[in-house]
Image 1 (spheres, rainbow, N blue to C red):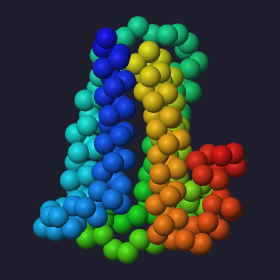
Image 2 (cartoon, rainbow, N blue to C red; image 1 turned 90 degrees about the horizontal axis):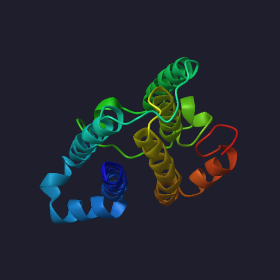
Image 3 (spheres, one colour; image 1 turned 90 degrees about the vertical axis):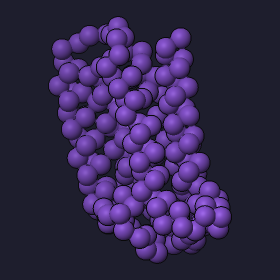
Image 4 (tube, rainbow, N blue to C red; image 1 turned 60 degrees about the vertical axis):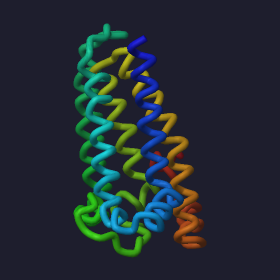
Length: 189
């Protein structure tokens, strides 16, 4: 029963994450509660963190038997975890940190083609894939397998939703970018 609740929690987390990121919800908040819209980005990030902490805790630290144990997978898991964190850092370098966190007013969006974005259109998703695989190899439990599968499923759905928004905002410029650069995994996908 615990694993079902955890799976439901992750699915709801990703649903809420995408729902709140949608242009429709943002526009609705901006029209109906303009004073609140100034704090939308920081609120979005705080909600994301508040939802993520208990889910990660339950997935990693609550008791769950190992699916397998292998001494050579630990260094590989550590390597992938660190690589994922470095990739996240490199992907975030393209943004104004204060603006991304909601501490500064958002400016008009610009399409980024440099850094990680020259190799993959969604480097945050790529970094997340690597990081979660590393976590699973370090903690190879049913719960972490569930996190891996649900997260990968969300990434496949989420990147498509994001692509639609980016085509709306940037038009032909983004369509050309799609033709030149892979979506999630450099050189592959």
